[in-house]
Image 1: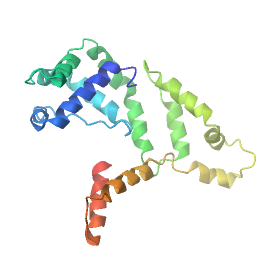
Image 2: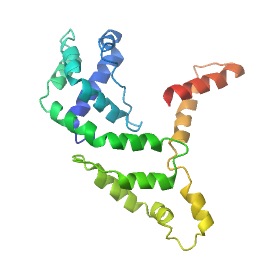
Image 3: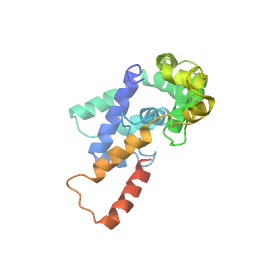
Image 4: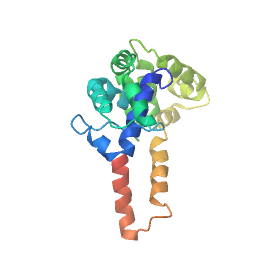
Length: 210
C-alpha cells in the first residue's frame, strides 16, 4: 500500500519528520490533534496516519504551508502537501481499507485464534482495492497449506480433538515479539532500576505501547 500510494506515503513521512524534529511545529497541530507517528513494523499504523490526513488534509496543508524557513525539509514538506493527487488517493483509502485496520487490530490480541483469523481474512472485501491487498492476502493464504489444512479439517493424521486445540491457537506471535522489543528497551545498558521498580516500569511501558 505504501508503494502504491507513494504520494500519501511521502506526505505521512514528511509530516512525521517535521513534528518529531521540532516541538514548535508539533504544537501547531495541537488544535486539530497531533498527527499519528506510524512505525513501519507496527501493523495498521501507516493506515491510521493516512486516515488522519484524509480527515484533516486542508488543516494539515495550511499548517505545513505556514512553516518558516527555506531548508530542504521545509521545501519537501510544502511540495508534498501541495500535490494535487493527494485528495483523490486519500478519498479512496479510508472508506476502502477501514475494515482491514479492524482485522489487523484484532490480530494483535492474545485471544485471537487461527480459526477466527481465517474467517475474518476470507470475509474481507474492498470496493476498489487499488493496492490489490485482497489478491495479496489470497496468495499468502493459499501458500500456507498448513493453515488451510487446520481450518479445513483435511489432514487425515489429525484427530478431531487435536483439530479443536489447533484451531484455538493464537493467530500471530505479535504479542510475544512486542514483549521482546519492550524488554530490549527495559534492559538497555544505560538504565539502572531497583528490583521493586522493574515490574512497575514494565507494566507501564507495555500499556503505553499497546
